[in-house]
Amino acid sequence: MLIPLLRSGVLYMIWRRHIKQRALGIIATALFVLAVNLIHSEALAFFSATNKSTLAPFAFYFRWLAWLAAGVSYLWFVERKIAKTAKAQRNASGKKTQPQSKPEAEPIEQHDGFDGLRHNTPLRSRAEIMLERKKRDKPD
Image (cartoon, rainbow, N blue to C red; front, side, top):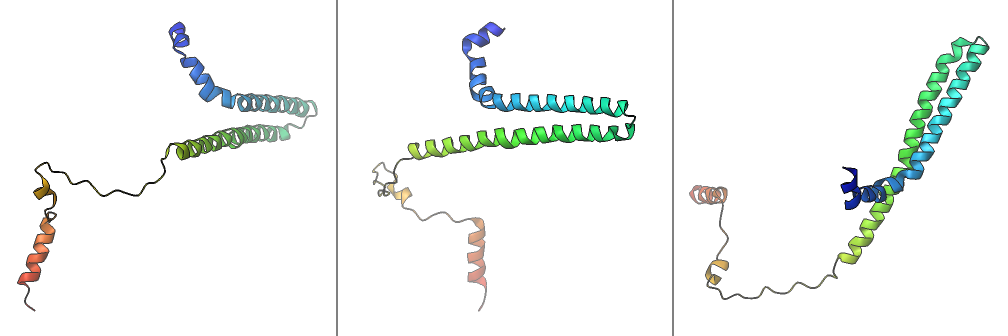
C-alpha cells in the first residue's frame, strides 16, 4: 500500500506542505519536552535524596507548566509564522490575478425577441400590492 502512495507523490506533497514547514518547530518542541522530563526526574531524585518529599508536587507542577509552555511556544512561533506566510502568499497571488478595473460598458442591446419582456416594469410582491391597495382604500 505504501508503494502506490510513494508513486503518486502523496507522501512528498504531505512532506512539502505540512511537515517541512513545521519540522524545526517539532524538533525544538520535542527536545524541550525531553529536557523538561530530564529536569523533572533529576528534581525528584534530588528531593528523595534530601528527604524533602514535600517539594515533589512542585516538580510535577513545573513539568506540566513547562509542557504547556512548550505547546504554546510551538503554536506561537511556528504556526503563527506559517499563517503569516500563507496570508502574504494569498495577498500576493490575489494582486496578480485580479485584472485592472475597467469602466463598465453599457449592455449591448440584444434583438432576440425578448426585448419587450426585458424592458417591462419589475414585478411587484404581494406585500407591495396589499400596501398600495390599503393606500387607495384608506380615506383621507
